[in-house]
Length: 76
Image (tube, one colour):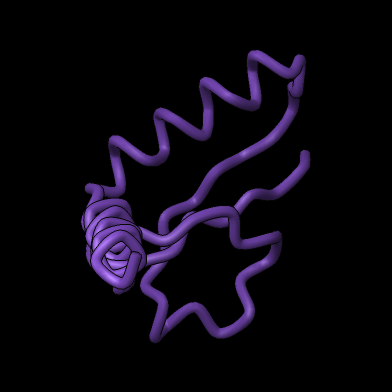
């Protein structure tokens, strides 16, 4: 039982590390596809440096490049 819990824990950490390592272009395309599938129009996605974001207008909808950058959603 302990081995099962350990295995599940390690797999969840590996999955999180893999998702955080996505390139910004790939993640931006995935987000666009999801928004368009839901019928969302008139929006902009912007890739910004996480450290230099300084409160960019909009809502952060994803992080990429190992957590160094954010994808910000803004409704037009």
